[in-house]
Length: 259
Image 1 (cartoon, rainbow, N blue to C red):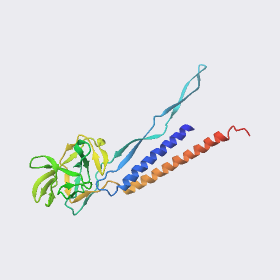
Image 2: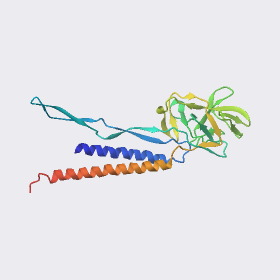
Image 3: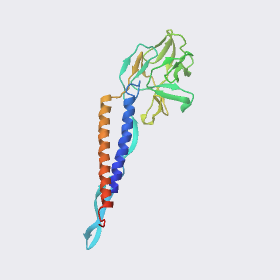
Image 4: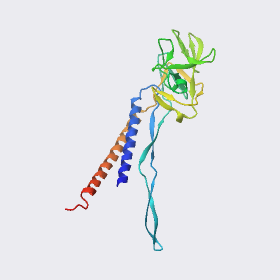
């Protein structure tokens, strides 16, 4: 009886965590370059059920009846890195990566010399004439004159970009966007502000579209269906807990009571 109570409660905890993930996905359905998460669930180790009712040669021997699961638990939260649709804009500082790859930005704190990675190419030029993202982090690019890695100094010039990420200021090719990719996306972790942290990035030549943004890969209808299913499963486990609680109450207060 108590075991079944634990099993039902573990299901409620898992479904609550799953609902939090779905809610976050829906909240970012319109966020540029956002990648949705999904909750991976696994069961606790099965417990072997056995007794000694079987008699062999006049002796009770172990009789294996089967196994029973102790419930579910959260395994991991995985990110879906599938491509979102590309939407055209009229802004020269909007960029989208088609296919694999990430833009690289730098801020004053963080790992790997403050480098973070993102699919969000909604950039702008700050008051210092430097290309930055919405959080003010510097967009990194290679200087084609000395191959050094650093900021893109646009100033008051006109910015243009070719399909390989080469940036020109007033029609003079000066930078190449520093785009990277990873052999194992499982090592990428969300760091907030639509950024990722990762190790061992490999510089690549991504296909870059100027005056375009990648929309999130969230399917709102699918997420709503998942939320409804999650809520129904939570309610089912909740009713099971209530039923077990009522049964335990009767067992404690009514069965065997002296009247």
